[in-house]
Length: 252
Image (tube, rainbow, N blue to C red; front, side):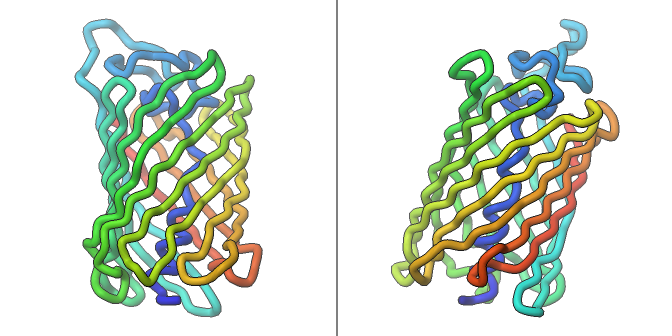
């Protein structure tokens, strides 16, 4: 399998754990006001500030990077993400640049709609488009799209979540693939959230599945600044060995 495809498959597994059902920038397990209208500015606990501070939606900027290691080979990369939320609509754009073997990677555009099915059960259907912005060694030059759905059940300090997606590939040499993730998280300090998940992804070039265990953490530095850390470990021989990502985010 080409290195670019391997790294892309693994990176698609990272980040399922963080959930923000009312899109106010505060993770669900920390959010003390879980159904705040998206037009309302909130404090670090997700509760509304004064009425006059309402804005038309909210932007999120995330910068960071990481490294992917497989079979003794490794490649570092940088990441840039920009997202916007308005009411229950969420749109994000992410692009990456590989550093160890320099080159631009493909980008992705995600559009989703979030809502509560019940008081505690939140759903986020959406679709992610892979945009062929990468150099030839990291991209097949095609536009792929992945409809997906995330379900998150909220408990007191805990949450249990699941993710399913199906990727339609434009390259006739690659198969359409399913991806699943299931896990749970806990809010430790009202500033630190952590989760573990088990992730499965079909291979686009062979029969069988790649399986991973993933750790995700989010730490609120203040009301607007936060960091996230993701680590994924392949647990079968077909999976990529290790992936680590660190990001700094700003809500504004």
